Image (cartoon, rainbow, N blue to C red; front, side):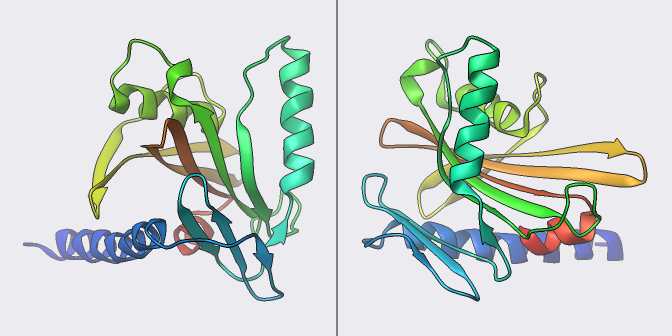
Length: 190
């Protein structure tokens, strides 16, 4: 194995540990949304999961919900994601320090006649705001299947990246989307 493969394996191993911890939290019972100065903890009893976000993030859930409803109204669409949690770091979107994460759901039965992987792949693209899908990596942690897609786009001097993890959970497509304007910030966030 060469040094590049070793680095890739180490990155995959670190990511697998983080995702294992995330999946472990799916099994824990939850109480309610709790915000602290240093971190965010979000729980959803219906979907039976808990997520603790990185420190330094601010709650943008209500403004994100309002923006998504307005965008759907402009398109005359009734299909809107349910935003469970939206966090940002308060930086301007044009800043190289900008980062965000969202947790969203969409009814699984609203993507008919598709197997789960295809539905998850579509959800990843929709969450990223794209019409085209990206290559999907399949990850299984603690028996829970995830479809993982990474998207990137150049915007002037910024390289915006989005990584979306989607699974089917209790009749819903459940997505975790991580976005940042630099690869190092995105890697830290995910």
